[in-house]
Length: 218
Ligand SMILES: Nc1ncnc2c1ncn2[C@@H]1O[C@H](COP(=O)(O)OP(=O)(O)OP(=O)(O)O)[C@@H](O)[C@H]1O
Ligand SMILES: [Mg+2]
Image 1 (spheres, rainbow, N blue to C red):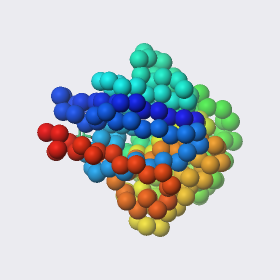
Image 2 (cartoon, protein in one colour):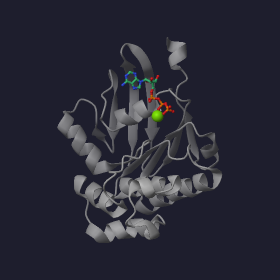
Image 3 (spheres, rainbow, N blue to C red):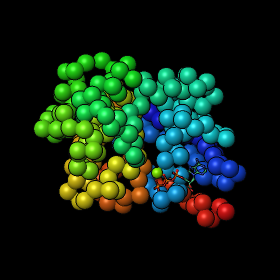
């Protein structure tokens, strides 16, 4: 599914974070946006997901406009088409992995029930941790659970915010391979935003974000 950002500008409290930012992705493309900490990567993810609205410019997903829509239309578009792997994992601490995935499935109106949840848990190598609570997971396991959560609704576009920067080399390679394989199997587009330079070797299309750093803009 295509993604298009045209001349997007966004400020926090008058401070420019993104200025005239344009970016396109073709359906099924895997793309990496690299930028330093504070360059506006998570802000960009929130804009694409419709959790923030740009001051100017337009964003569309699979030909559907995210900008100029009501909050409920944006929520609907995000739920139907985007799977987010959050920078902070955002698993519900009182629920085990299975419970977290069932809840996420209900929230996005996903199909497949417990069978799809079990399939994803198995696919992501978490079968031995089905009933573990988030705090009982290793960092690599928690990251994989967050990926399973993002994939539950079979999204057209998977967006991962900093999925690997906290991981050692072996887990970094596992997670990036998993993200790419899952996206390819589902025919989804994959957008990764990160300051982890190690990922450059793993994704063909690499773009920089933050040519205008907050410091330079101040
Ligand atoms: N709610 C907010 N109010 C004001 N400024 C904010 C807010 N959220 C983020 N910022 C600022 O916007 C800039 C971009 O933040 P953002 O979180 O998008 O960066 P990032 O590239 O994701 O960084 P990191 O790699 O550390 O995750 C930063 O300078 C940050 O301090
Ligand atoms: Mg961030």
